Structures are given as C-alpha cells and as structure tokens.
Amino acid sequence: MVSRLVSVDRWAAGSQAYFLTHLHSDHTNGLSSSWANGPLFCSRTTAKLFPFKFPEFNLSLIRILQIGTWHSLSLLSPCGSETHLQVMAIDAIHCPGSVMLVFRGEFGCLLYTGDFRWEATCERAMRSRDMLLGALKDQVVDIIHLDNTYCNPSYDFPPRQIAANQVVNIILSHPEHDIIIGIDTLGKEDLLHHIARVLKIKVSSYPFLRIWVWPERLRTMHLLGFHDIFTTNTSLTRVRAVPRYSFSIETLEALNKVHPTIGIMASGLPWLKTGLQMSGTHAGSFRISRSERAPWSANCEVQSDRQVGNTGPLERFHEYIYSVPYSDHSNFAELKEFVKLVRPNTLKGIVSSSSCYIEPMYYLGRHCGITQPARQLHMKHTSKGTIERVVAVSTKASTLDDEFVKSESKRRKTLKVKSSGSRSTKFSILRRRGRGAKISENDGPHNS
Image 1 (cartoon, helix red, strand yellow):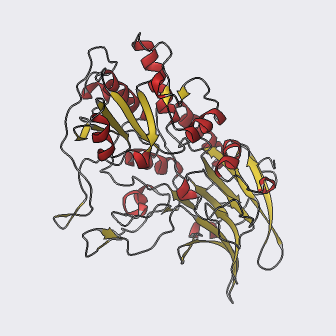
Image 2 (spheres, one colour):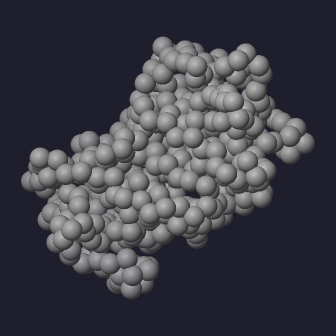
Image 3 (cartoon, one colour):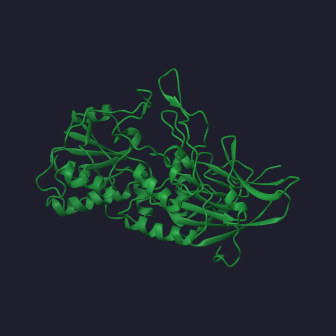
C-alpha cells in the first residue's frame, strides 16, 4: 500500500500536505476556490495574492512558509506511525512569491526548484545560493526536481538586466511609436519598473512616466507595492503592457492603422541559436526567424550587441514586432552551474513538452554526485513532424510517496516520487553506506 504524504504543485486528493511554488496557472491546474484537500503551504507573497486569484478560497487552509527557515511537519506513515519531515522555502527569483523547496527527513533530501532563474550576477540569486548551501551543508541531495524549461545548450540568453536594457533601447529608438509589451498576469514586474525608471531619467518629456496595464493587473501591482508607476489611463503613456493572449501580429497591424506602434515580446524561447541535430535532421520545431539589428539610439546605455555580452542581434519576427531574450527561467548554462553546485544523485525534469523534451540527465547527469550512465534522448517523431517523449514525466507537479518495503534480507525505508504513473526509487547505494540523510532534531531549528 502506498500513501501519498506530500504534493508539490499537484492538487488531487490523497496527500497530507500540499505545497505551491508560485501562482502561475500551469502550477495551479486543479486548484479552485472550492478546493479543500488539506493544508496548503506557500510563501507570504503568494498567500497575499491568493485571494485575488481564488476569491472564495478557504484561507484557513493556507500555511505561510518563511523564507530561509526550516518548518517541521508531522505526518502519518502507511503503517500508522508518526513520521517527521522538514521543509525550507528559498527565493526562486522567478515571479513574485516563487520559491524553491528543500525537503529532508528519514527518506533523505529532495530539492524542488519550481520555476527559477539562477543568474550569477543577480544579488537575489547570490542570497538564494548562500541560503541553499547553508540549508544543505554537507548533506547529499538525492533528487533535484529541476525547472528544465530551457535544458538544452541551444538556449543561450543573457541576464535579465541586459535584456531589460535592450527593451529600453528599442523604446528609445522609436520615439514616435506607441509600445506594446506582452506579459502574463504575474511576472516581469521588474522589467516594467526598469523601463519606467530609465525612461524617466533619459527622456525629459517623461518626468512622470507610467506604464499602462489592464485593471486586474493594476490591482496585482498595487498588492505588490507598485503604486506610482502603473495606470489604466491610456492618455498618460505611450507604453502599454497587455495580456500575452492579446499580443499578436493582427492586433499590431490594426493598431498601426491608427498610430505607429511596435510590439516587444520578452521571452527566452525565441532566442534559440540552433536546432538540436539528430541523425542529420532537426529534432524540434524551433522557430528561427530572420535577424534584424535594432536601430540603436546614440543616447542608449547599450548601443550594440558587443556591449551586451555577445548575445547576438535582436530578433525581429515582423515589421512591428521585436523579440527580446528576457526570461524568468534559467538558461542552459545557469542550469549546469546550479547542478554542479548541488551535485545531486539524480535529476528529474518538472516540465514536459511534446515539441522537444530532453531528459535533464542526458545533458546534466555528468555533473551529478554519482557517475551516471549515458542516457538516450527520450524522443520520438510524430506524424505531424513534432517530437514527443517516450517516457512520460509529470508537468510541473510532484507527489512525494512514502512506501515502506519489507523483504526477507533487509528492511529499509524508501521514498518514491510519482510522475504521471511512473515511479523511481531515489535511494542510492550511498544511503546504505551511511552518507547521511537521516535528520536528527538537533540538525536545524524547528520553526512552524
């Protein structure tokens, strides 16, 4: 009998505790205002935003995780005995409220990154790095559940600060144009704040620059503490942040019939250098458009590609649309550095895709703590020319299953992770050699 103890970004009934890494919809699929399957653990910022996304949710179910503090949970094992688990939330630097989660207990140590950005030059990332290393100390991490959105060497985009400067340069080089920026309902607040701050300094005609957002987004901005930068009055600004679903070539063509307008798409996805090669053919349906260098302004801080870290020319998909490599997910180099830092026993991706999924162990397994065998690319071609994984992996969700296995020769406790019907035992030979996963009460503070 298998008893689900803890679920992360997964909301089906059966677990004893539920953890939410952040409020993006692909992580809340299954949550609703009427959901009541158990206590829900999240960061303070996520808890603050929660009633806005789920207006009638029973807030008594929410438990706040203090960043950088160990929290203890007492759960019941399948045999009815009490088992203890500790968890620490660490800033994931993805969107407001996003966290990574470190779990430890008699089962070992797991690290669930959720969606995260691991920039070496980012002060917040440096603080998270120190916090993570302090939490792990010399402990072996058995599994990292990794944000593998861009786990492919082809994905090479710059730090967000450089990409944000590129956005400002585009705006400055189009002084007579309205600017449309596609964003989600949460995230990229720092980008918009940077645009407003720099344009206010550089352009004397914008002493009180604001950025237009739609009414629901303005409410979110106010909840996050942005009170003087955003507006719903279109007459106060030529820069508008619109819902991503309304950002399209057709919309921009219609706007240009009224007034010159350009769109800026801020995402790491189009910033793809080459397609993955398999047997002489492209293994993926990557969209590579013709590149067109942006008309840099003489007054810009960043005036050429060479000054922004050799990231290459900006992509221009259309007469009216620029693509800027601003991403809230880690690029491949950052993922590699993260895995080399933690050196887990194994990796599992939290993202699945039918277009080009590559198992993280294929590229990053060599950086794990145990020498890993060579892995094959778990892909297959479909009749439509896309590629699908052979081995299914849960999409941004995980359940920690505690199964106690008895045998004639030995008895030991194991933890299994359930992902879309497939199970993988995370205990390695190191556990049997005593390289430490059992946490005593004196190993860290027990703060609830």
